[in-house]
Length: 120
Image (tube, rainbow, N blue to C red; front, side, top):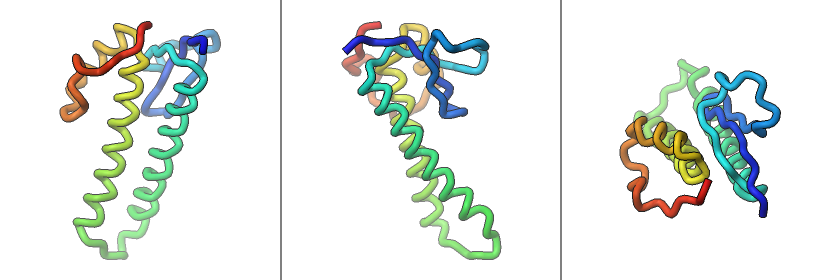
């Protein structure tokens, strides 16, 4: 499958073809992805958005007691989904994107040098 260049904003949960980006400052990462890889990233954004909505719903009910263990598990789920996104962006990323993510020191992501990354 042919690869296309995209710009990604993890915080905004957006992926935009490079040809459509007017203001580069809104996007942190440049990736090269085929259609299947792009759909995988979009699906990961959808999943983290659902987890985020669950956390927001829970936060909006301060009168409801909840066990700390339950909240920790929900927070952990969000963190894991976020790391999955960064891992995929790293795999699809340009050299500059990979350096940026490495500099973020995300801790327990798989060792960067062991990732079977795809060519740019």
